[in-house]
Length: 217
Length: 194
Image (cartoon, rainbow over all chains, first blue to last red; front, side, top):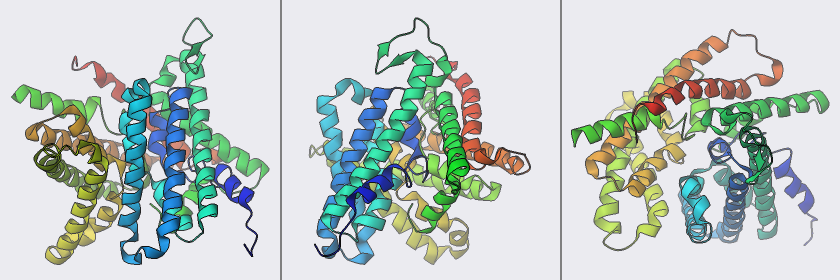
């Protein structure tokens, strides 16, 4: 390869500066929906990681055969195929979790983040960088979900990964729908504060608007 | 029978409200609730698309997919149906009713890859609803979503004047607000013993 591509930078990009949940504010639904515990958040993150990486690679391989006019529908069908794979795998090997979050696994197909990565990255780059970008974005998503799940499960149930270590449930409200929105809002505010205070950067809402302006929804 | 329909409507609109207890359609929810006018346009478009796509996908699911044992392809097929239908509606509206198109057309483009629209046929299929129940579910979900949009839009119009800490401006404070509304909607959960 002639030009040197910094894979580490592409990978890091998804975790920090363009973190799908906290920075781009894309795909928020699952971020609140499945994160009542660390375990659910982790499995959802793994599912997204898998779908994102595989669709990135697929699109990157066949990008020269897709006519630009039908590219969005083609991307959607590629994503849908990989989501079906994930859905059937989860239904077979993680039954108890699947009962709770099967619907959200199926709805990965409608995640803005996956489509927007295909459109803005994988459709222009080679297979290897695309795969790395998918991994980075997936890990960024995974970390965000685990973080939210950590706060909610710790405060709501006094447990982590299902392991109980306080006799009472400190703040039951945290595992109810309401708590998800609260934790999400507070964490986002916290990330904005860190970003403004220490890095002098933009608030996530601005990044969000830019992401939308680039035609990714 | 009629009672059953009523329960499905109330349950999908209030108790299992798509935004406040199923957490669906959040991107749209936070995106369009800055102004009341957009929120209302969006609710009309969403509700009609939901009802029609519920009916279309019910027909395809029970007439084509179940007899052919294609149930496992439902994600691929439903997203095909929804995006095909939205694209068709977009083209037809542009030709037939240009006035309406300029008012609501921009929202149609946002709908195609939206989890809330896709969730209706998926839930209908997993709950094994019949045609009438599916339609009611679509209508109830649409009504619940519209209610959520209108409540949020009216609060956010006031929020413009409020003095919010700098780091919380925009999305973070909207999340906290949504949490408070969700708390109020929690009160509906005891209405029907499910």
